[in-house]
Length: 229
Image (tube, rainbow, N blue to C red; front, side, top):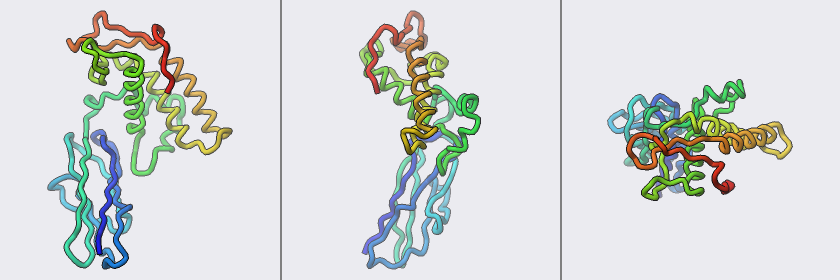
């Protein structure tokens, strides 16, 4: 007989941003006694919170750092636990290129599509940032030591704001579209075009030599042939 406490959570989250600590996929073998208690401790020494009914906890962290989340499952014997880590960043360290406020000026009802267990699209803004950095890498935008650029190398976020904003809108509508001719697909295609236009006109001020400024270190997508995603 065995207990399998499966724990799912985001890798990175921002302070004061709702996130879901999910133990709903836990399971036991047929010969195991019935589950009597399921608990989650959102970080070390915080104490366990019972979640037996829904088997998940929606939570937000007020402090930064690497948090150890523990799922504990009890049947008729000693509890079995599983742990995972989640990295909590403040807004400055997260350094995202766009925000939800910029989305609502284009789509006033966009926040109604935030997925369960979250209160914002910061996770999608973070995914967009990672994709942008990947595109820069794939197209040879490296620092002077031939290392891929990181978000810390981006001196002026405004240069990436429109590119990120339209990418986020595209990703959201692609995620909720379920047919090639529905309104969400049409919106996704519209924002894909705006994303490409914003990317191509971007003037990228980055710190190529890691000296803390971007003097004489401008880059432009107009000078290269882009690799498509």
